[in-house]
Each structure stands twice: as structure tokens, then as C-alpha cells.
Length: 301
Image 1 (cartoon, rainbow, N blue to C red):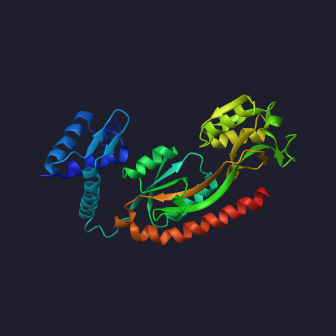
Image 2 (cartoon, rainbow, N blue to C red):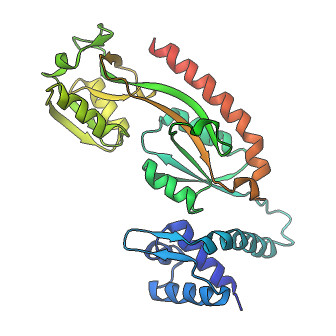
Image 3 (tube, rainbow, N blue to C red):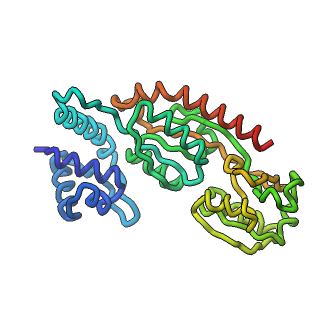
């Protein structure tokens, strides 16, 4: 017989993406969790996970069972709260966010979703968040869209922007508007480790024989941009990350752009606890992105 503990253990592994983290989250030992999941697989008559050193992925059967497990857990929670009239059941929406998302925009985006959901934010790289979305661990992801994704049913293009060089407003190049890569050779740079174009940017400057000294390498965009404003280095970044005290410059031949968008779980329209609420929020999200981006472009101009 399938027990609630089986469902809880299965969902913990799906949401965490690993047996170790899932065991910590639900406060059981990893061997006990592995035994519980193995018992569930025997009950349903099929393996639910593909286990490897690098990651845990759902099998085809696991993906189908995930919908059932979510329904069962919702039922268990509804039963637990039955008769508690003062308790309002608000569905949880897990949103994956790339680390280079502009903080101001993310604040507005999440505030809009929070009108209808309890929110949980998961940070990660583009690849990590796409894997989490495919595995059912999150229901939406704010990521750079790939070619052709903007028109898909489960994707919403929010705004497109160029990558630029950001310098302090007191920098000697601040009034130039556009510079050549070679002019940047003597400059000290700051490396944004969260940049999706980091490797491509490095290759671009190497081709132009620009091998700068670095004053900072950091995963924190806020720290990198504040150090640019402080004048200790310059950095490439999406235009939307520009802050007060920094000035964007175009780099000749440096034509990278990103289209930030919202990816939704492939089965989001089959999730009864979120589909209506999510569909109701999407037009407001689209308008929010359009107005915010327009304001940012005007501010940078």
C-alpha cells in the first residue's frame, strides 16, 4: 500500500534534485529515504528515478507519477486543514531565477506573482534551472530565452537588451558612446562570474589581444557594479544592470544580446492548483516587463 510517507519522500527528491538534500529537508536519514523510494517503486511497478553521480532525473514513469503525487499531496493537505475556516490555502509557486537577473525587475516580478501565490525562489544557472523545470522541481524560470523559444506556449518573452561595457561616470571614456576593443587593453576589468556570456566575452577580447588585469572576480552582480561605480575597474553586463554612477559604452564588434523571458513548466496547464492563478497574472507580468524595460532604456539614453 502506498503511504503518505512514500509520497512525501518522492516529492522531496523531485524538489531537491538529490537524495542527500531531500533527506535533510524532510529530516530523515539518507538510507531511510532510499528505502522508502525503493518501496514506492516496487508498489508502482516501475523505476521512478534515473540515478547517476551527477544528478537525479525522473524516468518517463516518474514524470507521469509526479502529477499523481502532487494531487495526492494536495489532497492530504486539504484533509489536514479541513474545518479550519481561518486558514487560507494559497498555492506554492517555485520560481527559478538566473543570478544575473536585475534586482529591481525581479522585485516587481515576484511582487506581482505574490498576489496569487506563496513564493519560493530557486537560484541557479540557465542549465540548472532548465533541468529543474523539466524535472518538475520548479514551475517557472526567469532565464535568457534561446532562439525560437519566445513564441512557444510555455514561454513568454519579456524584454531584449544588448550587453555593453559599463564604466564609472568619472572614467575618461565615459563620454565616448562607443569604443574599440583595442582601446580597452590598458583598462583594469571586473569579472562578473554570473554572466551567461562570460566565456564568449573572454574569447572576444582574446581575439583582439586584450588581456586585462582584474581587480575583482565575483558572483555578486551588485558588488561588481558598485565597484565599477567606485572606479576600480570596468565590466561587461546587460544594459539593465547599469546602476547610478555607471555609464554604458558600446564596444565595436561586441554584438551580444540577451532576451530575458519566463519559461513555464511543460505541464503547467495541467496543474489545477496553479493554472488559473498563473494565467491571470501573465498579462500583468507582460505589461510590467514592457513598462520597466522602456523606463530603463530611457534612463540609459
